[in-house]
Length: 142
Image 1 (cartoon, helix red, strand yellow):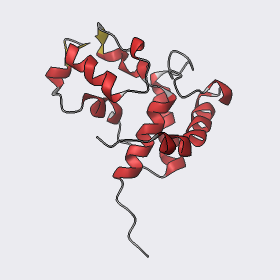
Image 2: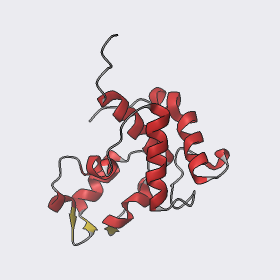
Image 3: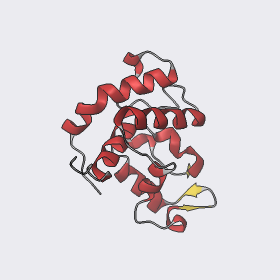
């Protein structure tokens, strides 16, 4: 997994925060790095698509749908990560590692798979943009 530095996050954070505030029609000062998009900012799942679309446009990156959950699962198979709609203990441990920006008291078993998006913070989206920027092949020289 690519390590993301605090400097990298700080470099793009203002634009990510402004984009999210705009998408959710909320005050930018409410958009804190550890704010849960759903619990703190009132986002709904449909808003995630809008936010991702706006971030893609703002940063000129492509963010595949479902990318955060797929990356959060990491090396675990779907069966290792979740069972019967519930995240396994291994899955919870993996989420704590992957979503290190999320306060650990928010990530605890039992956790329904459907609840994972509630964990996503503004910083989660900033890190997703950085990962996609790093993954994108450099444009060939003109």
